[in-house]
Image: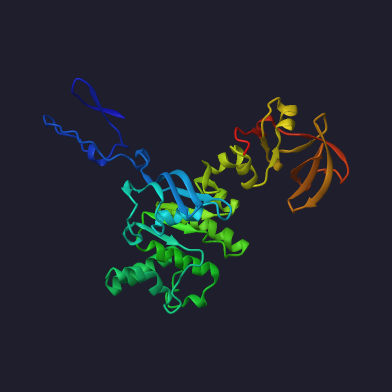
Length: 373
């Protein structure tokens, strides 16, 4: 960096300045300073979807009950919960397939209540894909452009480009019945993306796939979202999917949001017994046991992989069962009638069933919860 000229203060030249400031002025030239565009990383993230005290009732059933959610632009956001927890109803509220009983919804700052689905810059990928069986892949993907009156050559070119993006080049002439489950999933994604929506909604799209293909599609979806930089809202009951793919996760139960946070926060610092028990596998310790260990009479969560067999004095337990899982072995342990689960490396020296052992864990791994529900 070097001084350029003096105006009672020094103006410095920097190779990292925007192009609008890189051209050096001539001597005596009047200068006009124009604010240049900020780097994308400096932009304040815009809110893509906002729920403010939103409820959706079906008669006496509160499918969604006073939900507050804020989803950022370009975020991969997962809604995680058991069946009937309200996550899919929230997705349908964003799509416009349902209207809220009360509360307020915004999509990129615009009120969504009363706006029909076709007027929202939102597309949905359904669990059953909903492809047209009588159309080939190219026409399935280009269908939305055809409805908008886009010329055939233009829409076919756009469909071919998006098929290449989802790793299906050359598949345009095939029918859906000639595709595998993973390929049909990619076609459904391409059809949803061809309109360039600001928000893509995914309703358990991987549920029908086998484990290996599901894991492959998880990676592809995450890579695609990073490439497109649009907001993904992903509904699932699979904790592994939510934790591995999402930037943030909202955990649902009984129509309410129990906790929102990063996958790491949700897993390591659950706020309630429900979140600790539902997200991954956890040992939920009752207040009397926790008081004996750390002196606080509250519920606590202890993940199985945090437990170790101690050679020195620890918490005494008896091994109830031992199950080989490949790289790890699961021990079921008994502490005065309380059952705990520990995951230990299979190549470690492990106790046998019926052995009495001493357990230990790092103090930070025992997470005391504020909410005992």
